[in-house]
Image (cartoon, rainbow, N blue to C red; front, side):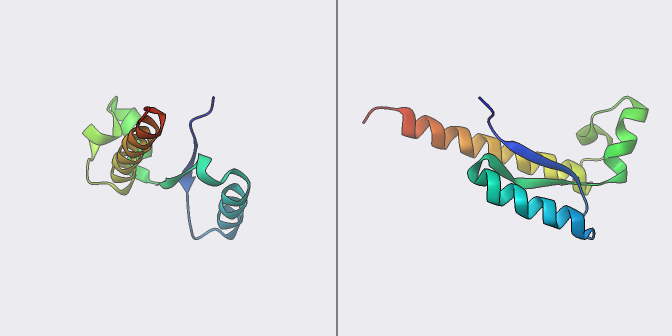
Amino acid sequence: KIEGLLRTMYDPRLSLMNDVSAQLKEHFGEQLYDTVIPRNIRLAEAPSYGMPALAYDKNSRGAIAYLALAGELVRRQRRTSRTAQPT
């Protein structure tokens, strides 16, 4: 089962990306994560230095977005766990 869809390398200045994002929301609804990972040079540089993005620059927009994704995943898991437990 697919847990969700993540938009990466997102640049809101490009109308095509906004159009595709809107279509994804329409078609996949709740399966689409709210978090969007932006196109970010610091994310692109990290592998060149053999480092994870968070270790390379934890304050970059990309690293902050991945932390937001982690929070969203935890919240979704908690919500799923609560609804799956018998009351």
